[in-house]
Length: 147
Image (cartoon, helix red, strand yellow):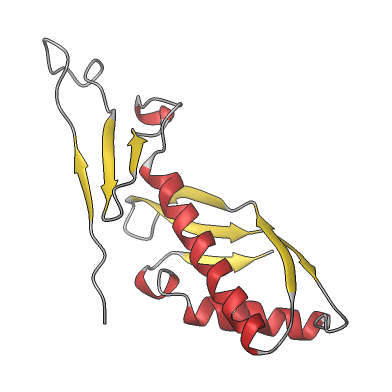
């Protein structure tokens, strides 16, 4: 159907290569030419002023869910004025005892326009369908819930 390419690049900028001293800073480049300064999470000696892979993963899930939700609403002629989400990913031990983002909680706040706002049941069904159709959610094992 389509390909999506991202490249990462890192270069050592310290004399040694000790675990506690090498920089985790790197660049993620996308096909569009956008470059994102990235690093490890601060808990893993990364730079807190850069995006870490775990946060990028959570953002990808939240973004995909939102875009799918908006598409579903548009097709149903349910106007959306705004959509904001504070997604929270949990890095925990999985069933194999490995560190993994085991769950992501989405906390969307949506403002609907016009006279066609969904009922609470319709809203729940829209989120369930958005999750079921989200490309990123369909690509991972992480449990994603909408709070």
